[in-house]
Image (cartoon, rainbow, N blue to C red; front, side):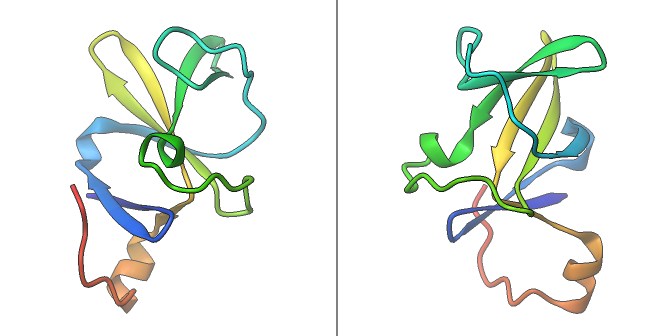
Length: 102
């Protein structure tokens, strides 16, 4: 599983769905249909969804920990903009996670 934070909530995705986890850089605010922006990844324009916005969490600027999780979808890649991805090492050491949504 890939565990990530948005605001104060934690979510998880099956690792098999995740193509790549990228550090955040500016994304183009000329969104494709169904996205909040796009990035160029290996020559491919990828839709990015700002999970904070769609989860109703107060908007905050990107930080050092902000990531884009690229998901494999039938119709291509899609990116999820999240506040932080919890590493496997953090999970082993213990994060104090008491509840994971999703």
